[in-house]
Image: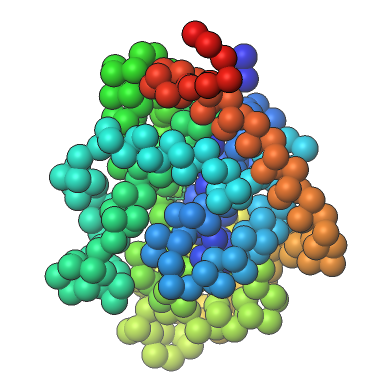
Length: 339
Ligand code: TRP
């Protein structure tokens, strides 16, 4: 029997090449082998963007177009919008009884995010919301609503999957075997660094190359990328290991890599030419993605149809799960029937 995969993204911005290498590529590769559900996690996005609903709304279609542009096939994968599946919210309520507040505070990903979002949750965390602290519970609902077996994610999401597994075990223990315990499938590619050398390429960090970036923008971004600061003149020898351009060459210029490395070390390659070579390779990689995206930009009704049909299909599955959960929890009342 085909296993089920579930993944998702928060619609807070367009997706970038870090998302592609870290996750989208695997999803495209797995779409034939598995039942794939892909969630546009707008409810989760609202947990730290509750004061900016327009941003979340506007990015739902953008993320959907990114999915379609990289080759996720709507005939194979079910793309859906989280807020349109009320069963996820319902499950979240029931699961919230099975998680302690202390446990949520211990989730390292949540902890890190609270630390990063002081502007929102306060220097001392005193403005932390119940919704944000509890989003791992909602993520457990995302996953279990579809009986997902496997969750392809980056390392940063492992604590979420662990917490989901705990909720599932506790639920099954108390109410009887009902939910599927998922496993994480961690991609081999680690996190992609940003153009500025930051450890993370981030939607909001201003250091990303987006899948939807035009050729000119890619050229410009690469032209501004950080190189070896000790290299002053064009023919100075340099250290590729401290150069972001070389870091991306390692991914996008595999064929020519030994030459690039050697020329750089010997001072035979100026940074301008080196950047041009990288920009060309990146543009070659992005071109088919841009073309597909253009098609969906020009046919927005098709995107909407895909989202509506995906959501309908996902909802059917979630309704099934909800019925089983209600039965296990003994809240499957029907007052039209006598016992
Ligand atoms: N938390 C994930 C992220 O920030 C997004 C997400 C929401 C997700 N629901 C999910 C990922 C379910 C995997 C499974 O990237």
